[in-house]
Amino acid sequence: MVALVGGSMPTLSPTVVLIFYWFETVTLTLFAFEYAVRLWSSPSRIKYATSFFGIVDFLSVIPVALGLIGVSIRSLRLLRILRLFKLARLVKAEKRLINAARRVRDEIYVCAIGSLVLLFIAAAGIYEFEHSAQPEVFSSIPASFWWATATLTTVGYGDAYPVTVGGKVFTMAVLLIGVGIVAVPTGLIARALMEDNSN
Image (cartoon, rainbow, N blue to C red):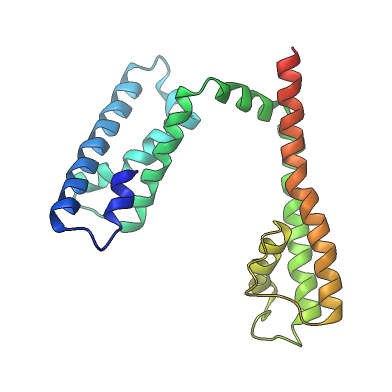
């Protein structure tokens, strides 16, 4: 991660950039070797390859595989960030968190589907209220999804906001609903974790 961040800094000397490049190349090669060994030594190769960490390992080494055949897609370099998930192997609490999420997965699915429905309603609603007043900002329902996402997650970037009375009232309702959307999955997982600890 240090090499990834350092390599993005334009003020570094060519020597330091080269050091970062070789450091990253070596570590990527080690990750690729580790993935190959894990895949080869696993009792069930398919089970490992399709597991969460197997997929993370595979995506992490794609830049190496493409580099070997002379293909370099700059956007794929972001996949290296996925290697941070490998640190979860070192955390004992990770299994409890995964077990808690599995226990309430049906509730999380329902919450996710409800969130998508509310996202659509919010985008369609703000379009109806604001399109005539701000045709360039809320030009269509798909364009309004940015505002709906920022508002439902209670982030509110401020680059798109209502100016009509109806739009403002609608936004207040969406903000209140958004607080619940963020809180529900967190509460479900926290409850499952507490039940796991009590057992």
